Length: 257
Image (cartoon, rainbow, N blue to C red; front, top):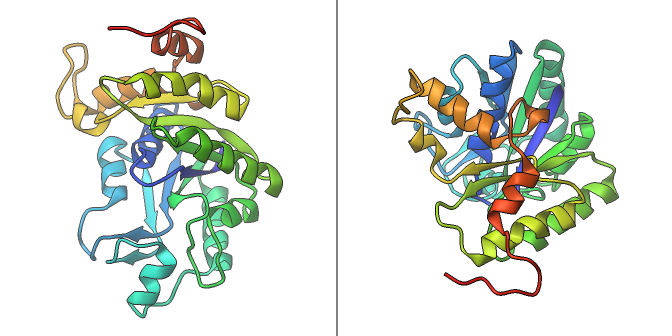
C-alpha cells in the first residue's frame, strides 16, 4: 500500500483511532506497518501521546515521533514559543521515504487540518504528501461545518495534484442528530465517492470492554475496525447500507421522532 498521509478536517475528529484501525487490519493481513506522528503538540516528554494509543490498539506496529512540543498550538507556533528548532520538510520527507522502503504500509499522521503549519516556511502535511507522492486520507467529524471543510480540503488536494484516498468519519455519535445523518449524503456529494469508513465515537474506550464474541481487547478493536472500514482498507464496511440506515427519509419529507 505504500505511504498514506492521514489528515483531519479539524482537531479531535478521530485521526488517531482511524490510523490505529487501518494499522490493525493491515497487520492482521500480514503487512509490516509503521505509523509516523510528525509532531505531537500539547504534551511534555514522557507523557503518553497519540502513538501510545496506536500501540495499545494495534500492538506490534512500529511507531515514530519526529518532534514533541508542550504547547497545544500548531507545530510551527509551538516550536517558536519553545524557542525550539522547527521541523524541516526535506528531513521529514527523507525519513518518511526511507520508512516507505522498509515497510509495506506507512501511515503519516498530521496535526490538526491539512494546512496546519509545521515550519516557519509554512510547510504542511499537504507539502509532505506531495514530496513523498502519498495519497491523503481525510478524517472528519459529522458536525454542521464538516461538508464545507471537506469540500475545501478536496479542492486543495485537486489543485495541488495530490491523490485523495477517501473520507472516514472518525467519530460517529452514538445518537446522531439530523445534521449528522443528513451529512452522510452531503459527504458523498462533495467528495464524489462513497465513504471509506465510519468509526464510532469512543471506539478506543469501547475496546477495553470485551465483547462476548471476542477473546481479547485486540479482538474487540479488530472487530470495530473491520466493521468501520471498507474493503480498500481491509474491512467490511458497506457505505451504501450505512447511508440508507443513517438517513432513510426520502427528499421532501420530514423526520419525526
